[in-house]
Every structure is written in structure tokens, then in C-alpha cells.
Image 1 (cartoon, helix red, strand yellow):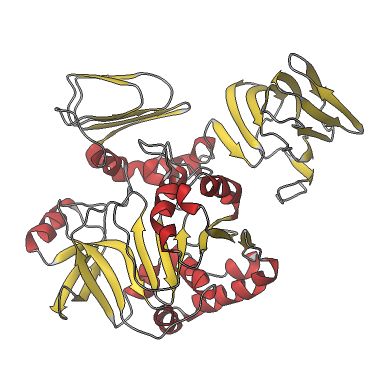
Image 2 (cartoon, rainbow, N blue to C red):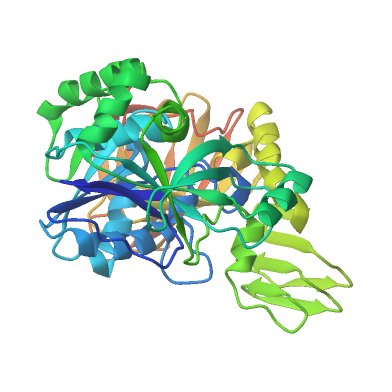
Amino acid sequence: MPRVVRDRWSCQVSHAGETPTLTIARMLIPVVLSGGAGTRLWPVSREAFPKPFMKLGGASSLLQRTLDRALPLADGGRAAIVTNREYFFKTREEVDGCPGARGVRVTQLLEPVGRNTAPAVALARQAAELAAAGSIVLFGIRPSVPETGFGYIEMGDALGGEARAVRRFVEKPDAALAVQFLADGGFVWNSGMFCFRAQTILDAMQVHAPELLASARAAWEASRADASDEKLPIAEQPFVACPEISIDYAVMEKADDVVVLPAAFHWSDIGSWKAVAEELQPDADGNTTVGEALLQDAKNTHVQSEDRLVAAVGVENLLIVDTPDALLVADKDASQQVRAIVERLKSSGHEAARLHRTVARPWGTYTVLQEGPRFKIKRIEVKPKERLSLQMHHHRSEHWIVVSGTAKVQCDERVHLVAANESTYIPIGTRHRLENPGVVPLVMIEVQCGDYLGEDDIVRFDDAYGRPTGG
């Protein structure tokens, strides 16, 4: 989850989880690129709750850590986050809970679909004043181990000081090649952090990715009328024309004046569970844990548990990540292959690729407690003064039991209140809405019955959060 800082100068600096902060010039507008799927961090990172929202051994999410480093650079009091429109409400919660965001006006640029980093960089540029052209500086990290999960850069001629010309980019190598690169001394990890003036990157895009730049500009122009201080939804039709490509492939590997500056600070892209383990303090046997874990005769093993005790006995070099609905057990050296599991889940239509058992919604959360043939039981929590959409279902009825708080229920034309320890029934095909009129959270149990209980059996007629209506 990289962040970009740009106005007079443009910079892409640090992935979430890093320590350093880079200050480049005056009147900086930090722009955070947020929304990578983080498939190698499944089962915690999922499509509907991706890597930026993860909390890895601390109280703050990766997005909040990034904002805490980036937003102090917003000397103009403005910042932006480029993310998917599905993440708007969750991102707003993260910003509201971030001490570093106080006093900074943060606007979200909402992409209708994911298109990797190059269109996001082009869109972010459209929001800022441009400056004169210069070199594109790429920050490389001197490798400490023969890592196969990172791309590498081969450094060329010295250009003065620490700066070196870029000889070539090398994709993620196999283990033997990574060992060779480490021994050579002329290779650095490609950190994905850049420093460039805005006009420089635009000129490079015009030469090497003109169709992408034209699509990004068209999307920007088509979206400006809907902009507010809080959000700018990017128009879908022009934006989907952008190719799905990274800024590395689109521009950096093709541009002429690209310079690499080797850096020695600690850096990690937190891109795998092995990387997560390396960020934690190990015990005498090299084990790391998050949550409640008990290890016996175990070595070099990482255990992460959300809500129950995990015990590991007589194991070595393992990754064990336990969530309420999915368990990952992997060899540490195979941590890059977790993404293949996610692809298999997606291809089979399994909900574990997209959703957690507890799912965040603009109005609150729901948790699937149990499900089986023709039934599903949920715990629903609605924030004070929030309400669900006016909706109906073709395939299921619902029984609502209020645990605490008071529910305001609309069922066709009837509107009534349901207090704690009371219940109501929503028949199939009935237009209904749930609202919390109180000042404390509304907690209720929902029992669904029917021949199909998927989340896509929702036809919305009205929604306070701007989500699509129809079915």
C-alpha cells in the first residue's frame, strides 16, 4: 500500500509498515494509494477487507500507520486517498480514527474498479499544480537476504554521490538467482518508491503510455463535477478503459532518465506472512505470535490467532494463521504461494476469497454465526442513527430478534419499534428496512430461511449511502 506525495514535487514513498518518512519540497499534497488485495496475506486480507485495513500486532491499521507518516507532510492542509469506491466508508472510519489526520482535509478519489498503480498516479497528478521536469528517482533497498518475493534493479554507472543509473529491472527471481544478486552487490530491491516532479511523470506517460494517460484524463474531467471535499467518485466508463498495469511496467522500465538511489533504512512491503513474522520480536527459538498461542518444541514458527487458542507442537518453519472461518498452515518458504489459494477460492466461487465471517457495512457490521441447508444465523450491529437500505429478497424470509437497543422496522407500509427481547418477521418478497433510532448500538440476531441465502439476493429500492439500487 504505497503512498504518493505530490504538488510541486511528486514522490511515491514507503509501503505501510515502514519507518522512514521522506520530505521533498514545499506545498506537498500527500496522496495515498490504498486498496491492494494483499492476496498473499489471506485469510486476514480479503477482497472486501484488504491489506490496508489489517492490524498486524498493533492498534493501528496499515493504512493508519501510513497516514500518520504521510499527513504531517501536508503543509497545505490537504491530502488524498486513491481507493476503490467499495472502501469509501471503511476508509473514512480509518481516517477518523487516525491522530495524524486531525486538521488535514482528506479527499477520497474513488475508483470504480481496480486498475493497479499507473492510472492512480495519473489521476492523483490531475489534482495538483505541476512543476518543471527533472529526473525520475527510484529508491532501491540494499538486500539483506536472497529474497524471492521482491523485484530487483541492477545498478549501472555512478552519477555522483550515491545515485546510480538504472541498468535493468529484474522480475522476482528464483532462489538461486536471488543468492547470486545478493553476492554480486550491484543489485537492490525495487521498493516501489519514487520521487519525481509531476510534469516529469506526465511527459513520460505521454511517451510510453499515451492511451493510459488519455483515459485517466478523460476519467478525471468526467468526474470533477461530482467532487466534494470528502470524496470524488471517478466516472466508470472512461476509467475502465485504463489498462490494468503498474507504474513500473507502464513507465519506469521504459523511461530514459531513471536514476536509482540505494537506501539503507529498514523497509518491508509487508507482502507475505513471512514478512509479517520478520517484523515481530521472536522468542529464543525464533517463534513469533499474535493473539493467544501456545508453542511446545517449536522453532521458527509464526502463529496468529484472532479469537481462540492455537497450540503448535514439534513443528518448524511454519506459518499458522487462524481466523473464525479459515485456517492457513504453510511452510514459511512457500509464503508467496498463498495467492494461489486465493485464486482457487475465486475460481470456485467460495465466499472466503471475498468476505470475512464479520463484514463491515456503512451502517455497522454483521457476523455469520452459523449456516446450513436452508438457514443462516447472523449477529447484526447497527450504529446509532444509521439505517440499512430499503430492500427485499426473492428467496428468503428473515426473523429479527433484538438483543439490545431499539429497532425501527419498516415492513411494506407498516413502521413499528421493536425493543430488546422482542422480535419481528419479514416474509419473502416484502419491502423492508431496519434502522437504529437510538444513541447506543442496536444489536440483533437475524435468522434467515430459504432456498438461497447468498448476499446477492438483495434488491435495493433506496439507500442512504449511495449504493446501487435495483436487482
